[in-house]
Amino acid sequence: MSKTIKILFLGDIVGKPGRLAVKHYIDNLAEKPDAIIANIENASHGFGLTLKNYNELLSYGINYFTSGNHIFDKREIFQYIDNADKIIRPINYPKGTKGKGYGVFEVNGYKIGVINVLGRTFMNMFESPWDLIDKAIEEIQKSTKIIIMDIHAEASAEKICMGKYYAEKGMTGIFGTHTHVQTADEQIIGGRCGYITDAGFCGDTEGVIGMEYEASINRLKTLILDRLDVSDTGKSQVNGVVIEVDYETGDCVSIKRINEKIINKEENMIMKG
Image (cartoon, rainbow, N blue to C red; front, side, top):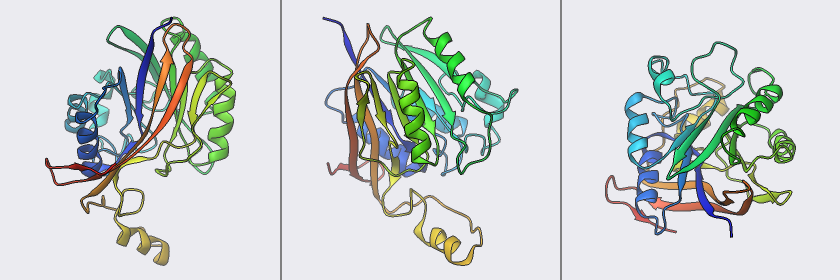
């Protein structure tokens, strides 16, 4: 019988509430997955990623990081992203952008390939990703049959189309991010590829997709782009999926949605289930 491994993918981590909730969740897992991947483009006060928070999240036991359109919001990332071997930015940023769009990491003797891509519907018109992803798959398959892709996109239809298309190309798992609203369509496409349109987010549950309600409603009512701050009411969630993978074939054999509610009290946190 082939060896199966478990991979946990966590949706967008939003600010300190999200980081604390994720730490508590990982620390209290009864059975640790073989690998943990997380989207961290909102990890530092909701916009971007500082070097301090990058190292902090690594210390939690997260093995690899994907990102999205906010990854360069903290200017300091330009100073360290080329040397941060556990993080990728979307593959379809313009040629010459710092960082890389895909990579392979190894944990416990297992090699796992990861690709990050930005959608183009209702978002800034980044480079067309199709040929770039095809080339990345070819390169990753030289090292491993396990390939995970984070589609950071606004439109569900775009994510679904890319999911179906790249499931046929041999992907192991395709997970949507960006909307911060978890969908209930987890499935295995073609008997091989684990898929969810949006994995959701990790952060405060009482705001608006992790940000304060008051500023969010004022933006809608006045059309004035008021400053958005991370919501921190003490009530958080951890969203994501965990998949089980046949390491020899790269096939996803099971997928489970993660939606845990957590009460934040700094280091004293309570899992609500």
